[in-house]
Image 1 (cartoon, rainbow, N blue to C red):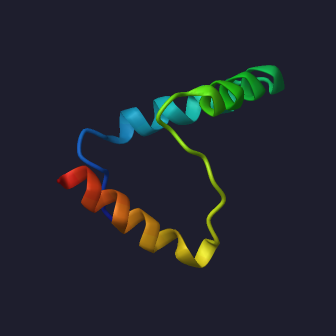
Image 2: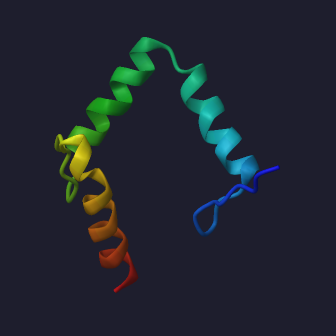
Length: 66
Protein backbone atom coordinates (compact mmCIF):
# COMPACT_ATOMS: atom_id res chain seq x y z
CA UNK A 1 0.00 0.00 0.00
CA UNK A 2 1.32 3.46 -0.85
CA UNK A 3 0.63 6.70 0.94
CA UNK A 4 -0.23 9.86 -0.95
CA UNK A 5 1.66 13.08 -0.34
CA UNK A 6 -0.26 16.28 -0.92
CA UNK A 7 1.01 19.86 -0.94
CA UNK A 8 0.24 21.92 2.18
CA UNK A 9 -3.48 22.65 2.34
CA UNK A 10 -4.41 19.84 -0.04
CA UNK A 11 -6.01 16.49 0.69
CA UNK A 12 -7.72 13.77 -1.32
CA UNK A 13 -11.08 15.56 -1.19
CA UNK A 14 -9.60 18.73 -2.68
CA UNK A 15 -7.86 16.78 -5.45
CA UNK A 16 -11.13 15.03 -6.31
CA UNK A 17 -12.93 18.40 -6.34
CA UNK A 18 -10.41 19.88 -8.78
CA UNK A 19 -10.58 16.80 -11.01
CA UNK A 20 -14.38 16.94 -11.03
CA UNK A 21 -14.26 20.62 -12.00
CA UNK A 22 -12.04 20.05 -15.02
CA UNK A 23 -13.69 16.80 -16.11
CA UNK A 24 -17.12 18.46 -16.12
CA UNK A 25 -16.09 21.46 -18.26
CA UNK A 26 -17.26 21.62 -21.83
CA UNK A 27 -15.00 22.96 -24.59
CA UNK A 28 -16.36 26.52 -24.35
CA UNK A 29 -15.74 26.61 -20.58
CA UNK A 30 -12.21 25.29 -21.07
CA UNK A 31 -11.49 27.97 -23.65
CA UNK A 32 -12.95 30.72 -21.43
CA UNK A 33 -10.75 29.63 -18.52
CA UNK A 34 -7.63 29.67 -20.70
CA UNK A 35 -8.54 33.11 -22.08
CA UNK A 36 -9.06 34.45 -18.56
CA UNK A 37 -5.65 33.14 -17.51
CA UNK A 38 -4.03 34.85 -20.48
CA UNK A 39 -5.56 38.18 -19.44
CA UNK A 40 -4.61 37.95 -15.75
CA UNK A 41 -2.27 40.75 -14.71
CA UNK A 42 0.95 39.72 -13.06
CA UNK A 43 0.90 36.21 -14.53
CA UNK A 44 2.96 34.93 -17.45
CA UNK A 45 2.23 31.69 -19.27
CA UNK A 46 5.08 30.07 -21.14
CA UNK A 47 6.16 26.77 -22.61
CA UNK A 48 8.93 25.04 -20.69
CA UNK A 49 10.90 22.11 -22.09
CA UNK A 50 9.80 19.00 -20.22
CA UNK A 51 13.27 18.17 -18.97
CA UNK A 52 13.48 21.61 -17.29
CA UNK A 53 10.13 21.34 -15.45
CA UNK A 54 11.65 19.96 -12.21
CA UNK A 55 14.11 22.86 -12.08
CA UNK A 56 11.37 25.43 -12.71
CA UNK A 57 9.22 23.82 -10.01
CA UNK A 58 12.12 24.01 -7.56
CA UNK A 59 12.67 27.69 -8.36
CA UNK A 60 8.97 28.43 -7.84
CA UNK A 61 8.94 26.52 -4.55
CA UNK A 62 11.92 28.51 -3.28
CA UNK A 63 10.29 31.79 -4.34
CA UNK A 64 7.06 30.90 -2.53
CA UNK A 65 9.02 30.01 0.59
CA UNK A 66 10.76 33.36 0.80
